[in-house]
Length: 367
Image 1 (cartoon, rainbow, N blue to C red):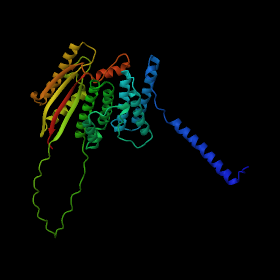
Image 2: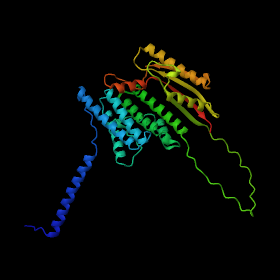
Image 3: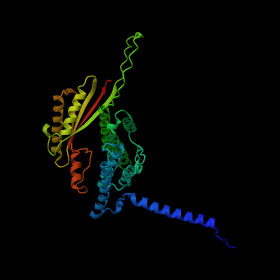
């Protein structure tokens, strides 16, 4: 039996074919405009400098896309831009530590998902993926991060919150692979970031709302008699935890060596702690040093850094009996630096992160 192709059916078939061709062409155009996901070399093949350099070029390309978003007007402290940067940073950090698991690739993928959504103007989620089967450690920190992100002053604390959430995943990945000892430094980073985020949210300028005055009563209408309102009971104290970092140049420890932002932050901290109505329990100082000196020398140097910060705070009105000190030297570094795998600029920046004094404040502020 033969079928003849009538004109209406032939037109319909031709239209369908043309639609399919157009769809394929449009799909190809979209794919050509969308940057492909960066694929790192499989761990078993990372055996030569050219291979590692190729992966580093991939990291550089992703970094340039983040910079382009900032150049295009997206603020550095934007939650999603900061989160993309922190995913990129933890991916590169574990890559340089020779993490042979899927974590570097999956963390890099999370960065690129956010970048692609921002480049395309798409709606963005605040969810944080537990990549590589990471454990969800410290539910209290997750809850605090969400509270700061959704609370008053959140616009000033977005970057710190975003990075804290990524570091909690980082810690959960280390816990799954090598248990608590390897997760601990990254939990500490998350704690510090959330404390700094809360401090930024507390200090964030509140919007000024102008309320027009009520209309004056008519001349013929006597003003109603009013009684003074009953005094309102005081609000319960708000728990407050502050933290900041004071950085030093290599082998320096005096007050004049403190970096200018650290001096400004200590001045602001002194004003906050001596403000009326603030009651705090203790201030704990932790001194750190990098790895470029013997252990005894590093502990002595970090102790000198702690005493400099202690004297500075006492000079600005903080009671000496409230301050406790700890000098760790190069022990328990928050950033692990490897001269063999990191480029010089990255290695120097990594060492700088360990040359500092951490200031922790526990207390309560009366409202």
